[in-house]
Amino acid sequence: MRRVPGGHLWPSLLVAGVVLWATATAETDLARLWSSGGRIAEFLGRMVPPDLTVMPEVIKGTAETLRIAILGTLGAVVLSIPLGLAAAATVAPGWLHPPVRVLLALIRAIPLILVAMLMVGAVGLGPLPGIIAIAFHATGMLAKFYAEAIDDVARAPVEALESAGAGMLQRLRFAIWPQMAPTVTRDTIFRFELNFRESLVLGIVGAGGIGFYIQSYIRSFQYEKAATVTIAVALLVVVIEGVNTLLRRRLA
Image (cartoon, rainbow, N blue to C red):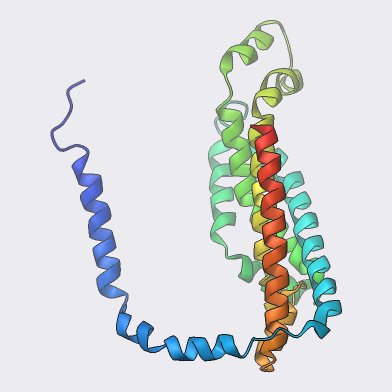
């Protein structure tokens, strides 16, 4: 095939043009950032030393955030299995997987905070709206990942079982699943980590979790207590990241 001269140049020019447009229209003023250094330092200074008397509330809120992330991820996995199968071009009929993929894109397009606000209005305050919001929002990504994992498997084992008269469930169990299991497990672990981080902000709209305490302390100018919550969250995120890294290495 004849290569068009400059064929690799225009994407770079397009990206450069978009970056220049964003920079020119974003009203970025580095002088304002430099002048705000004193106010940022003053804000951080109010958080020292952290107030450890709020540790019971921190533990309670962190446990609730973990429950939201765990149950929300579980709900997303349950929903993503059938949707992922329906969105996979290699196993779903040609008339089915395009609209399912569009549906998943629409789910991903809806902001998590908006889903949480709708759920709070529908079912009330507490962790339940947070769980529903996380499960709904994560399904758009997980189902897409599952469908792509199915489409990326080698076709030879699948075709061999199909020629031997194996049904769809048998092909999924013995030919498709063994190939996609490491990818699916890795993506699910990654999504759980992301769900935990997103669960931190759900308390702002009353959907449970430690975000409620962060908002309350900041609004009441109790910065020392907010610092304690922030440190606890940072430590827990580091622990979860370490566990996820170990699991991914074992699956590699």
